[in-house]
Length: 83
Image (cartoon, rainbow, N blue to C red; front, side, top):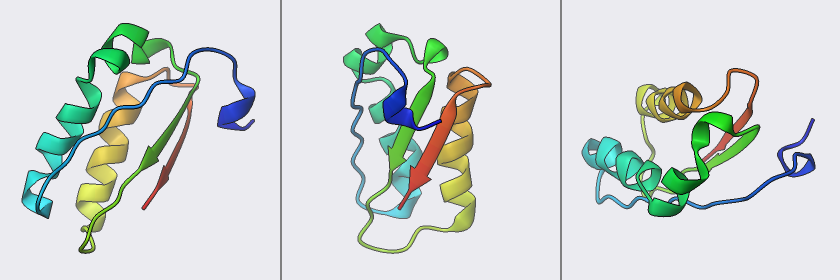
């Protein structure tokens, strides 16, 4: 299954931070976007996470972001994360 094969609405949440210490804040900004909230992530069948950072982020922070999103969507959802 590919994310684009699933049917339904598509939304975009964006968070911005200046350094790796603020990644959690940026993640919450992205997930609290009114479009994301109104669409209801819990029923999502697919999610694409794109992380852009001027410096490398640690594997721990990368996993934190992915795990946080996975907790908010259906257990059967396809979650793809890229950096």
